[in-house]
Image (cartoon, rainbow, N blue to C red; front, side, top):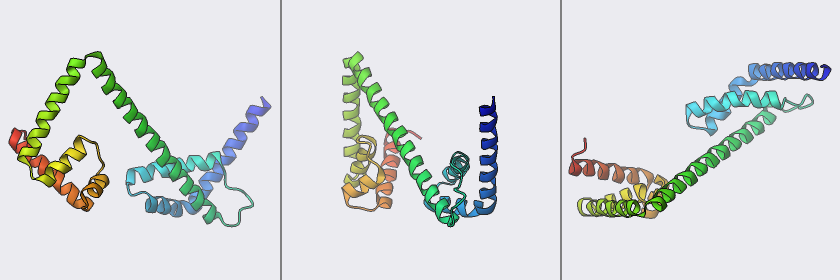
Length: 179
């Protein structure tokens, strides 16, 4: 029972220490996070997660450069968050690939039909769109390229890649009478 009580007292002290650090350096912490992360919702999540991080790993009492310590800890937490997101996205991608493969394996004729339909769609894209628009749309939605990869592949900037995709999709909707 004494161990449990000691753990509770230690946790309470850690929460108070983290709250004190946030009272004194909260604006600094939030500013650093916002400078490193452009999405406000993600910045807010990281700000809250950083408080919990300080509860788990309190500031060393003998630290003379608290802002430097906080900066390094914030950067490490951001890197950890990015890695978690990337692992999650990779896991989703592997799952979707596995699901796609298993549906084709279960009924090969469905895979053949999907392939034929995709070939027809690609044919329409190539006939109806300008070369740059067709290539951008194909790279984005068939090969699953990111915008920066499309821009690099086509030797254009990201804005131009978005523009080609947007125009191509607009024309495809018109041709297909979707919206």
